[in-house]
Image (cartoon, rainbow, N blue to C red; front, side):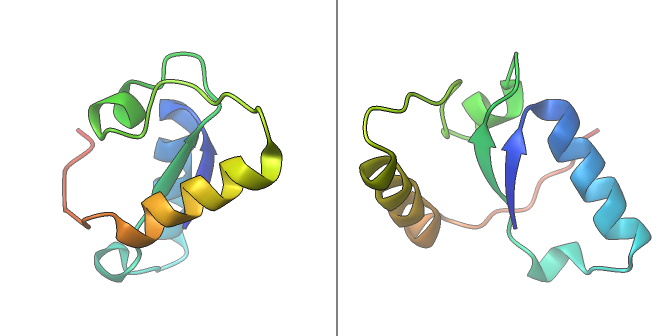
Length: 77
């Protein structure tokens, strides 16, 4: 799952996934930090904001980050 937004968007997405019975243990979540604070994205090493220089290059770079990312469990609250 890729979430574009900030901390609130990520929280809402996870809440909706739980409501729909999606097993979070088997659903890695990547972040596109489009929010204002992006604390979670920054802490996880995804950056604090998006900078578009070349959309194709950006999407390729982000896709490679997601593919090679280490999946880890954590508690939002």
